[in-house]
Amino acid sequence: MHLYGLKNCDTCRAALKALRAAGQEVDFTDLRADTVSSENLVRFQAAFGAALINRRSSTWRGLSDSQRAADPLDLLAAHPALMKRPVIEAGGQLYLGWGADVRAALLGNGAQSA
Image 1 (cartoon, rainbow, N blue to C red):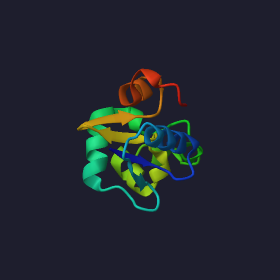
Image 2 (cartoon, rainbow, N blue to C red):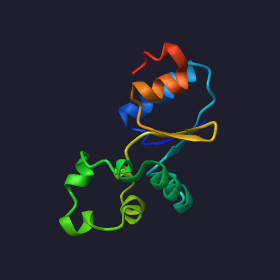
Image 3 (cartoon, rainbow, N blue to C red):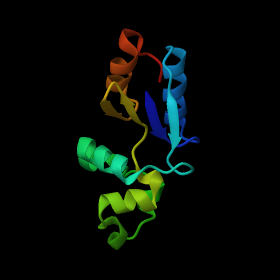
């Protein structure tokens, strides 16, 4: 299992902690420090489309209208914090966020960890 996120993101830390507590072996990629390959960004966008960009983030609010109109993959490459997080790859499937649906899929019925 692989989790892509930010080390200082509360949601990413909660997901990592819950997955490891459930006995999962989780590799972690920090979007800022480690960067994400363009191939992975393409895969993520193909899987999630517009949902991959976090338009509620302070990073998004700090962009000009012309910057926001740029290609989403270019935006994510330049501003990794724009990616909605975490992106989790498990069993050949991609998951976005750490909502109840993702917790249930990855943790089973005991998906109470937020």
